[in-house]
Structures are given as structure tokens and as C-alpha cells.
Length: 237
Picture 1 (cartoon, helix red, strand yellow):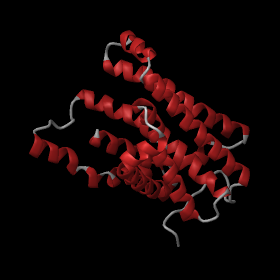
Picture 2 (cartoon, one colour; picture 1 turned 180 degrees about the horizontal axis):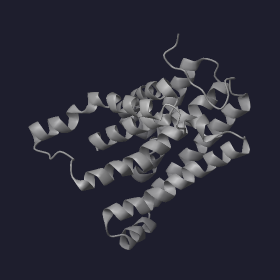
Picture 3 (spheres, helix red, strand yellow; picture 1 turned 90 degrees about the vertical axis):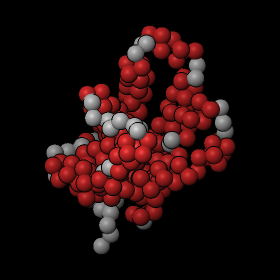
């Protein structure tokens, strides 16, 4: 029996058109990231920074619209296809078990802030600001990425890729390269040039995708993988 059990809105394999829709949505998300990168290095970003001199408010002013642009089309797709939020992992079923698994899964990463505190004199992130920082990672970084990739694209791409494991690997590659367009635009590099400079980082992201997928498929509830994802992002900073 496979260790990964992916489900979407039904127990049948997604149709080919669902896989195609998922790939088109992936392209859309990458275009949004690239445009955000262009915005980030433009004079409009300078105006945004002037309007929100506090860096936390500025970060929210930049990130919230970006998340809305990414997620609204996803929910429109679900609505048009008559699919529930549960088909992308948003459900009450097994949510407590999912959260427990997510908390356990983050334990191997706990040594990172402790090591920084012991050997580099960095403070442990335990103040009130840290709580807000974690909530930022959870609500605006981890949860959207989990919904998009583990909840939606990965389950629908099986309409194009019969092998479950190959579908998971393919989604992992898509997840990794989605981290390219924003930085590519900011650094003014071409696609191949940026990948050549950061391929090890992209491999790590692929590995994290497999890790998050394993967490998600224990319950097919997005809460656990989103929580683990947010905590890892928060720990690594």
C-alpha cells in the first residue's frame, strides 16, 4: 500500500480537463509572482513604503493583495465545478489529528533556533511580535501555498499523470519553480540563470514538498501541513 493517499472531491480519478485546469492555474500563479517581483522593484513599491513606514504594515499591504490575487481564481474554479472546500483540504474532519501530526512533524526542525541561540547569540523568538510573525507565515504564506499545491494542483494533476508518485514529484517540481519568478524579476535574471544559481535551494524546496505531502495525506486535512509549513518558515526565518 502506498504511503500517499490523495483524494479530491470524489473517489474517482480527476478528469483530464481538471489536470489541464490545474496547470493553467499554476501558470497564472507564476505570472502573478513575476508581476509582483516587477512591482517590488518599481517606484510603486517606494510609494507603498512611504504610505506604510512601519515595515510590518508595509509587508501586509504588499502580501494581502498578492494572496487574494492567487486564491480568488482557485475558489472561482471550485465554485464553477461544483466542488467543495473540503476537496482541497479545508474541512473539520480529522482536524485535531492533522494539527497534532503537523506539530510532531516540525520537531526535527526545532534545533535551528536553539543552535542559533547557543552558538551565535541570537535570541529565541518567544515575544509577542513573534506570535504575530508566526500568524503572518501561517495565514499569508503557508496556508495559501498548501491550498494551491497540496490541496488543489497535486490532486487534480492526476487527471494527466496516472502514477500517483509521479504526480507528487511533478507537483513538487512545480512548487519549487514557483519560487523562481518573483526573485527572477527582482534580481533581473533570466529563468535559467536564476535556477543555475539556486538549484540547491530548489532541491530543498522539492524535499519539503514531499514532507508536507506526507503530512497532508495522513488525514487529507490541510491544517497539519499548513501548520508545519508555517512553523518551519518561521523557525528558518
